[in-house]
Image 1: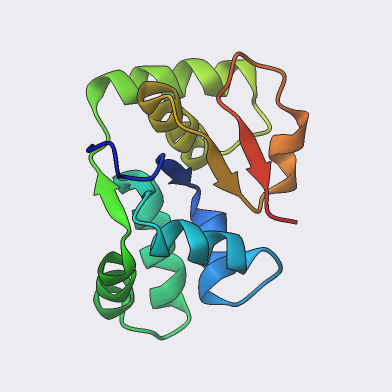
Image 2: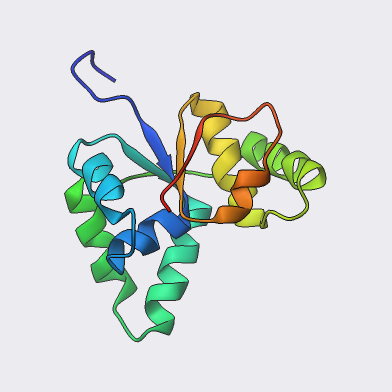
Length: 133
């Protein structure tokens, strides 16, 4: 990224859903999106798409709007998969999606935004985690 680019932040699916539903903390996600520094793992985007579709909305349209706001989607790599598996073994209360998000954050050296309180129990060599609520 150029030097004028904001520091990246990795969004967990719960953070994106909080933004979409205007739940507490959504302003922080909006700021990350507007600043162009928001990244999501493709695995976590699948979680968002599933929730949006289950609520009867057009997931492609919603994701397109998020991308227009500045959300960047990062592919889930083989290395991410192995890291997520190792993290899941260390923190079994986290979902596989949570671990995928953390794996991306570790790879990028970026903080994470989440609305999931289960993350507060993390005691790993993890990136900075900001709880939205």
